[in-house]
Length: 440
Ligand code: SF4
Image 1: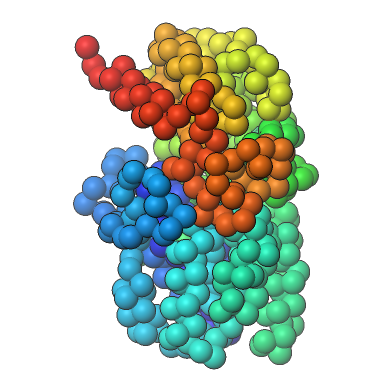
Image 2: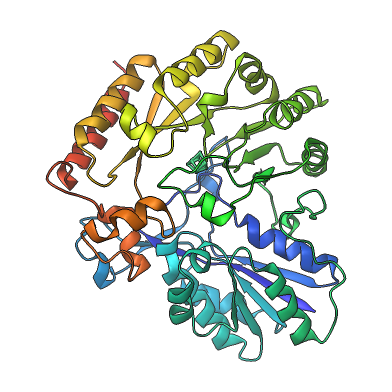
């Protein structure tokens, strides 16, 4: 069986490779390879290698493109990040026809890139079977079926059995290795070897989260927390280090949950390795779970920066959106990090902006509070995500039909702008943060 993996280009107002990678697609590729498949990969999300930073991040190649009607009101340039349709067609044309083409999709409102990839693949390989997976069909299944009609199968994140049956049907074989994605200790390592050079490797150590934050889709996607043994993660680090990888990325939503059984033994193990690695955590950890020992382990194991989720300093909003953190616990976490010697300049703290009926002043208060504590505020614009409590509760208050077309879920539209939080207020906040960051 020949299988082609495609990570499509994306269309958006801004994008940058903050250690992003099509991890799920590469895991599925490895499972197929264990079943005897020959793999090839087209990762459309190319970066400008000459601008890659020492920490592994890099800008995507990009080009301005016309905005779709839904996004005409946004006063920013719309771009394709990644290679063009023509380049993709050329690269597809250089390959032998695969039996199976797997295409992933990430943010719901990035589906135009997925659609473009499906249609290009269908044009070049009319006889190949195309399967779409990833977050878009998991959260917007019916819409994905309409938008991605050229595909033969669309699977949600929890439908791996359906995928295996499909592969068995089209190849008239029985797959010998059909793990659940939750059998984390037996999953083969994702097939990063398909890349010429591997700038970093994400480590997946868990699925799910014990919290139920009202704006977050993790509880819907993975209702039960599943952990991977720290021995297995350490073995994977040794494996990748052995072929030259020194940067690792933690994507977990709940890395610190049950920390005495998982995160601490893992970080102790990393600290004892006979080599050094660099670790980044773009998805943030929960500050409420950081204690003295963890703070010391972040330093010893190679965390080059630490991203922490705070989201708001309003106690009522903290409570009503899920209660994962309080300001008191957050301050305690910063204190133990400071004592452990963690560089405060390397601590970034996420604050949410643009929540339904949020006032812009509350975001500014949070920003001032974080600057006063000597850490870096990072304002994340709220994205309405289907199947979250907040989406279902407030969808009818959005300025656009966010439940009808995922394009309207793009946070650049500021879907919940109101007189208490306008686009001008958001622009002011961004400028304010930029100016406060300037030295002197
Ligand atoms: S703690 Fe993080 S991952 Fe868990 S539900 Fe809240 S936002 Fe989602």
